[in-house]
Length: 440
Picture 1: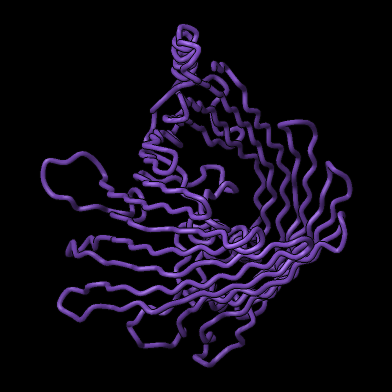
Picture 2: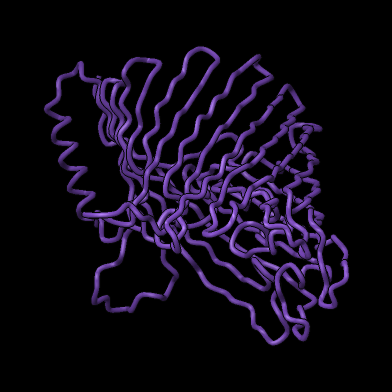
């Protein structure tokens, strides 16, 4: 991560430079400069988040905060520049009398050039977010978010949208070699993908994704590749909203002095929402991500990799799967029910109930086949619009684990999970957009 890139003082100097230049601009230049500020503190009580808390372990509690400031400049609808920096802190981790500068990171720094109304090029550090964010998402729940260094060639005309993205990563400027250690930086050496979306009717649309990823082996510098193919179908009309997803993964992982390891994995999902009235809605869905059997001796990779999506959104808010804690690559079957209640224009509640099972076989401590049932989770959340640009949100989640959760989380036989696994959070998001200047 780039550190010490910008300070708040530098950003305000930039604002002044842009502002002064715009004041001298001709009226027909159609320039605009916006400032975005976000302060998002979040208090958490963690009693079994990510992985089961064990007897003898104590819950954690803290307040973390994201602080962002950004600029967006546009000119003549032909050039847009985005720049934002952020600090992610935990309340109390800095001394009261600061002796060193706060470390900041460059979250976004990109320019978008329009060749004509249909074609554009966006280049630099940017967020890549597509469809429902299963494979490529902003990860906004995480305080640091997710970004990529890439070039994006965009096309949009009538009912068709298409993006072609290219990225090539290095750990630093070099004189020799292009070896890339993905444990230190981005998780891939190179990425190329084509995404397309077509709007058939006002109610029906579909998207498709073809992606290739390259990573480099630290032992012999060999290149592994992973291809992901698939897409989504969306149908939304009046009170009904239906979405279907399918992706297939294949690839080749060279192994020194041995045959290559092949990838053969897939995932599918379907969800249907129905608005009973203006205040109450219900949703039901199911996701399946292929996995491996715990006793398998095959070298083939059969577990699906959800890559760079916002997994917190799908597989339970306590993030037992695919986020910060592995579950032994056994895959996942997630069946869930959503209930939504809009109490007023400002206040809404949501309750989601999940049932989790493994896709692959689970083996217990004795080497015998165990139940595929991993547990059940309930997530109760609310959102309240305090005023324009200020939103209060919070939630309570509880996980009821089954014994098989111990096996996939690699908990030792003599360790006992606590009977209560829960998580409580409360956050306020202050996020105004400020128009600094606009000329026409």
